Image 1 (tube, rainbow, N blue to C red):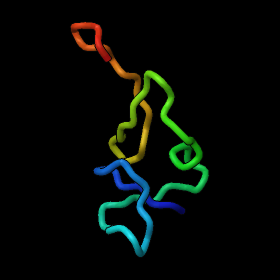
Image 2 (image 1 turned 90 degrees about the horizontal axis):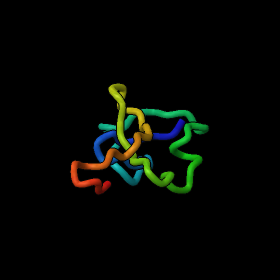
Image 3 (image 1 turned 30 degrees about the vertical axis):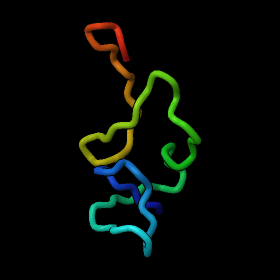
Image 4 (image 1 turned 90 degrees about the vertical axis):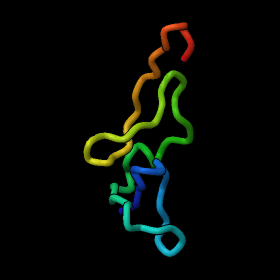
Length: 64
């Protein structure tokens, strides 16, 4: 298992980071396998504190 901090949206490394807010994710979770976030997407957190990708919605001016 690997650790993820839903507040900072980063991986947590035991012995280096504070693990009090971290949740455990399986080694094969997409967050640990991807090198970069796909264009048009952003990192977010679901109600369980797990990392998810969501589409970027353009604002009223058409900017992302």
